[in-house]
Image (cartoon, rainbow, N blue to C red; front, side, top):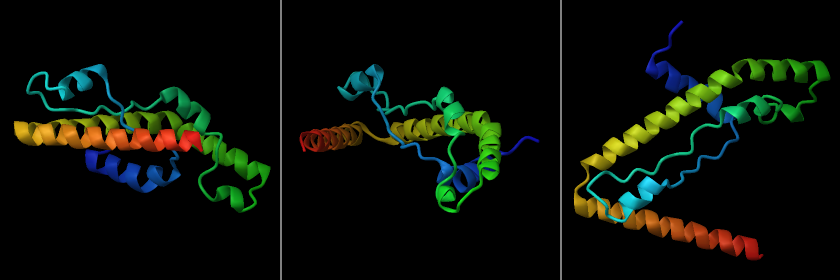
Length: 142
């Protein structure tokens, strides 16, 4: 059965999102950094890290949030591992597809901006990155 885009998004948001413990982090590619420095009029895309399909194979050996606090038997725990393993590969594919869609939305949204707006966006992103970097440095010092 082929799911529509709407159903895929709904499935991801309602079923998979609460069970995931993967932080969403954006990273800069060399191309995006070059674009940010003003090279060309292309939209400034901050590509997301693609889903690591190899990690999905390891994640199935975890129980969903709060399940570990309800005194699962070993049999129940193994059943849950089996269920999670069954869906791990498909889940990783959908996560990657969703990341691609988010990148496309961002790219198309940035294409709407004029040069001044794009420059301001670059400035704001740079400030946020500097703030996060300073916070990380402060955290490592303590």
